[in-house]
Image (tube, rainbow, N blue to C red):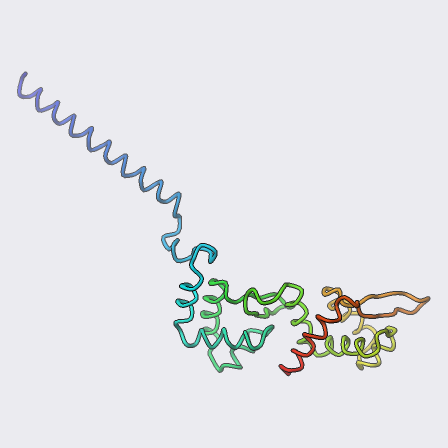
Amino acid sequence: MQPALKRAIIAFALASIIIVSFAAVLQQQRNFQEVTPNPYYLLVLPTSFVNFGANDQTTFNNGTRTQIYNYIDNNPGIQFRGVCAGLSIQVGLAQYHLGVLIKADLVSFIRDGRYKRFFPAKKFSRKEMLTISLLRHKTARKILEALLDKKQLSHGELAGRVSITSQALTWQMKRIGKTQFILQTNEGLKTIYSLDENSTPTLTKYLALAEEKQ
């Protein structure tokens, strides 16, 4: 075989090997990206795939973060500004550590109008969180306390008892209606309000909690 032809065959073989190897590397990278699109994938696994004890320990390795969790645990339904004011910490710092706690599934929240109310995760049902949030509003709490005391009141009687206008009571009833605590019936032109008996124990329990946190 002529030397020139031999060199050409060798060069072709080497080029083929390089092309095949390069293609294999590209395929491996493509497969890896499909499985782990986020380079920080292992840091954001859902908590159900992470040993909770280890996660817990890592999350609470910061003193400020531990303070925030304990404050929310002792004050369920607290607003963000309440956390900042209660612990005298800056807004940005509180936002960061709350984000870590929420991501670790240690703190949850529900929306209350324009605001968020924070709770220790997995300690309360959604209805309980709605109830606690509702009872943190002074007027709503007065309405429910009045119905616990009198069992049944007309729209006018209830408005007078809590010292608000008829229109304001109508607005409050729309908010309270989300908890399904109050039953509404009509007697002629009168609207009568009463408490759902099945909800009374829950209401009584969290009214006591709301009074403790005042």
